[in-house]
Length: 220
Image 1 (cartoon, helix red, strand yellow):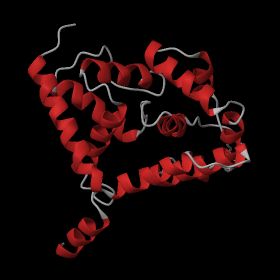
Image 2 (cartoon, rainbow, N blue to C red; image 1 turned 120 degrees about the vertical axis):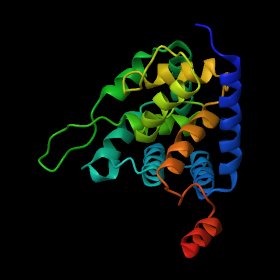
Image 3 (cartoon, rainbow, N blue to C red; image 1 turned 90 degrees about the vertical axis):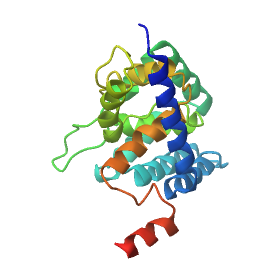
Image 4 (tube, rainbow, N blue to C red; image 1 turned 30 degrees about the horizontal axis):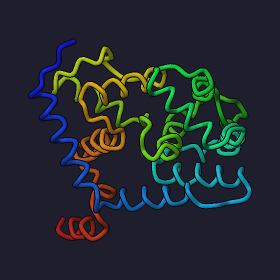
């Protein structure tokens, strides 16, 4: 499908601006901390994976820690594979739109609710885990991205073939947007989608530096 080159250029400019704006933010600081933790040497693989999940759950508020045994069960599933195997599967999924192993991982339910029933998947947390594991080159699925995606493709007239994203199609839909927009950088794309909704909802605590945010609060 033919894309409007000016619309795509306008979108790439906005994405680059958001990426630069976020470099001094508290979010960037915390993201860099998690990234360093992903590269720490730790002899116990299960403990390393579990620590990673706790850190991501804390920064991104994926709520996994509120489920009984959710973090533990997901760590047990992830620890069956090396980082290299997960990275290879992630690259295959985003490039080909299919990967039986990751599709199964995303489909499974982890943890229990207050009456001891399994009821929720962990798509958002797993996508963020793979995002860090691939050095920010895997699409993230979360509530802000879901809101931002249809707005972006409408505003910039980008025909991805997906009118909205779901937990079943987010890899394909965001990969298509990344490709057609010629951004070709999932970190920049995710930053923009997340940043645009933070601005729209006047939620500033992560998008500014600590100093900028406190100054804004004091000014009222």
